[in-house]
Length: 341
Ligand SMILES: [Zn+2]
Ligand SMILES: [Zn+2]
Image (tube, rainbow, N blue to C red):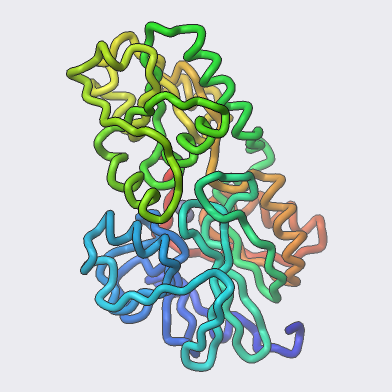
């Protein structure tokens, strides 16, 4: 480790398909089909179909197979456990928990005495449905920056869940429909509701059923889940319904009985955004690190060099320079933000 290693940018390169590790011959979260891919997690912008060989955790591969079909998830799929070291060519690859969604991993690559850790998407808040983020010391830390502005401060999820349950108690005749994306946020909301003692059935839009089943098959307990059929709106009185963000704004949700439209996203910190989306009850629940957690994590990883990718790179790089941490923007394209949907 340290300064004796080979400068990472000489062997870990930015390409139109994403980060390419030359001595290992693989891409990290490639944005188009490649021969060898190491994948951090199963969100659609990081896990694309059609690679020849895919290395990822069991959880990530299981979700990929659910969403894209077994074959499209990778002609050859290799599972790797957190913390297990695997030699690929001249490099050693190890995946570490990222705390983002089921199976999500940071990707550690050691070559010529230099360790690079690529965070993928991550959060530091507790999540009952996935393994918590692990701090790994590195020479180069590649971090996401989705919420890389000081305005983004995510409160504890338990408090936001208490707001939801408070509203359910106050409006027992209405249906609370919560917009949340299908992989990660949906299951985390269910897990947090159960932790808060909510033991009634939770209703799911059809788009959320398959990934919940995959979580269960991976050992995550979610309690009783039922399909939400808008035709049967009487039985949804007083219930909590989870649906994709796109469904809460359209006719699907409006056919429910006097719905309370809720949305769970880090972007709900911005009031205008909630208003514009017709959201009555915004819940600030995010699966990405907020501003403080980005800075805290970067300090704990203690990397002398930080590469910042997808999000608000400039503000974060500026803040790091004031902390004497050398950082630069990686101009990777093709990564979005599932919470913005
Ligand atoms: Zn993600
Ligand atoms: Zn991402």
